[in-house]
Figure 1 (cartoon, rainbow, N blue to C red):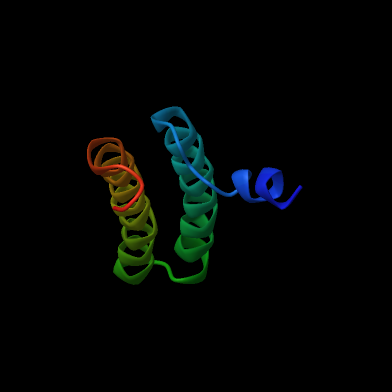
Figure 2: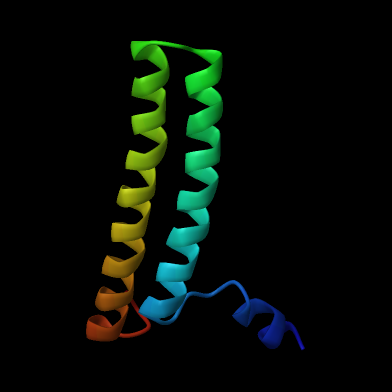
Length: 76
């Protein structure tokens, strides 16, 4: 039973990584819009860009990890 539960939190395919990246991007845009309202001007724009930039880095890292996992197997 725990193996099935554990499987819910393991990303095995690129499609799953893309779905998670989309969810992260949706949240980052919402948070970035709040920053634009709270901090008008350059401060809000920089925080908005930081939110969206972090999604690009996280998505790239997830996809890269899936490729490494397929190449090197379970040990990596």
